[in-house]
Image (cartoon, rainbow, N blue to C red; front, side, top):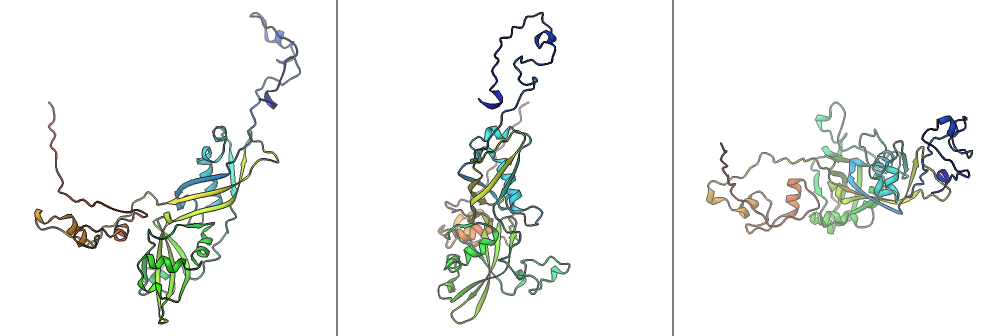
Length: 336
């Protein structure tokens, strides 16, 4: 090691068991006798070694605060600090620093300038009236469409950039086609209107207006699972500060940052009031039950993957091998 520990004693010092402190330092309080430090240990200086590419994962709320209380830069800085060993080559050393401060700059816009007009939900006092002039979720005949598992993942630089990506050629058209909107193939235009929304930290709602070949329009609520969206920032700026942190002109301060957005762990399954029940034990046939629940397309076990996803709120999965069987009870005797 150099620097703080590069101290060489030029005069041999012999300490006997009967020597006093004043004997050792000649009464001047200097233990080094070589004109060095006053005996206080100097801490090693650490130069952060940022990885060229950083990949983290979590839910959307880890990097985006829908309430506006925290900015994305602040949240990402917290994620980097919490995963510092995956972000820096010398993350082990940095993690040991108690006063570490990390700030980032991803060039995120302060406001969603690309998204205008109505919010998804009316947050005023009369929101229960569901006025379509105040919230687009109240639009009559609004058609909910779940973004299909067959559609491509969407890479964005910010939430504002989501609109830009969706408006690229054929992206909306293909998304609606994959989701089962039969008219999308021949429709002439697809337009994004109003502001996006996030529900249950799982679904991003986007208002899409489809103009069909006969000039009539359909209002869609395109629901995109957050797990289909990835944040990709090509030059995220990362600054590390602390008492023992030392940066030079050659210290790397930018990285390619990828955040794989997943589904929030909180469950939001709602079974609803409609229930199908077998009248006798002999009627309990797994395939018939699945068909009765609209979770299978026939009584031979052909699962409707998209219907299962909607019902369970578990996205980006493929279900197979259905199994429903009578529950068994095992009795266990208590030992005296």
